Length: 136
Image (cartoon, rainbow, N blue to C red; front, side):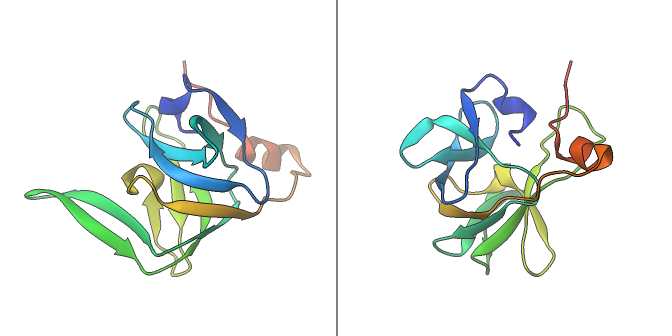
């Protein structure tokens, strides 16, 4: 999916084998772009498996400003969190240790490959879970 703050950016769905890069789109959030077209947001479905080329690096706000974080993992599953709250970031990565981190906190310029997409929904409930939230 693409977070609500990327709604005004040209986008396309992710495909298996895509080479992605984390990018600050200048909209107040970070997301994924294709390495060969960094001006197009690549929307990732919840459940998509990603492999990063190195340990994932992020940053969070601390007492004295931004603090760097390193997640000791090279793989993650794309998730959406806080879906019940409108106009907040939803796109996140779940790491093998069960920790979840918002995609918008990742450092720009990190590269990942789409390993696997989620299975196609078989029920209405599964379809709704995969659809992007509509914001008014």
